[in-house]
Image (cartoon, rainbow, N blue to C red; front, top):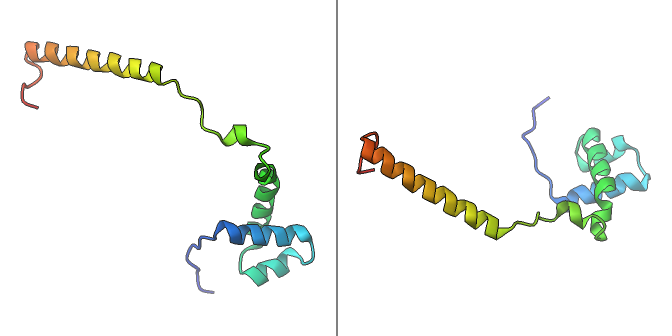
Length: 102
């Protein structure tokens, strides 16, 4: 039996296969043969569809939304680190531990 290369399936294809599995008209083996994928893969896509079905209707937007970032805090941290780097660079240069031409 020849070894197949790794295939990537489109989200539309995965949804089509998972919905066919949820319909229950055919067995997993029949679906696997029809769509040329492993039965375990169909089971996994079916599970993912069940877990994320609420996202389609906007039910779980909080879990996938980006966390709120306070830019003032980040800018203050950048300023502090820049100041510390400049101080360390000048002190190391004075001590002769850092060459002047980087």
